[in-house]
Length: 259
Ligand SMILES: [Ca+2]
Ligand SMILES: [Ca+2]
Ligand SMILES: [Ca+2]
Ligand SMILES: [Ca+2]
Image (tube, rainbow, N blue to C red; front, side, top):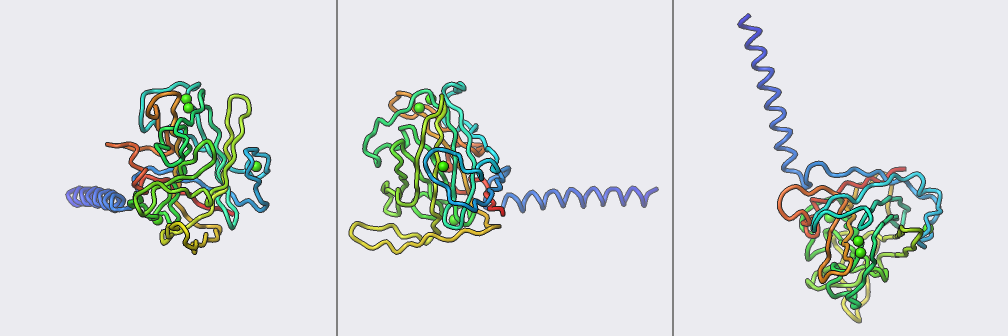
């Protein structure tokens, strides 16, 4: 009896130790727990970025919701709904976003001014799924897509820059929905911002099956206020500053390029 009891205790202790170690190993990892895992199918044929999802490969990709309220009050289904799909080719990552937004607004006509306070689709991309800080570096890109299809992010000079040449972007309205199609070239963390008059020596990488990247999608919804009313994303954000993914790539989900 005593022996069995001793055995029970040690098994329990071992299990607890295992759970504790597994937990502490996880907390040391580069990403917040419970990230989305998204498997993007391979698009053998080219995708026409035109806001029309009539390429058959889109049927094979699953929808992922934008339903995490990071900033602002509760909102209705008429106010905002969003979801996205991802497919890939060797040269680009393609994202299709379906959005319901009752009022479309682009108050700040200068794309580099307060761009997050207009209706903005945000695509966060971490080429190597490293996680970590990406505020003033290119460990990850946070493309703020404006309604006029420009892609803006903060550069290494700590100022807003246009990266519109990285992202092909078109959207169309269909009924009460907006379909936004994007074709994005992928750059690594050694990307050099191109100063005016200098050559652009950056090369987009080629994608391959099995590659793992960090991805998060979000929408800034403004319907007429001075500042954006809501910031809604694809990833959960427990704790303080739920919008902290704008500088912390550890909040991004995991994107797997499948065959
Ligand atoms: Ca298309
Ligand atoms: Ca709205
Ligand atoms: Ca990175
Ligand atoms: Ca809006």
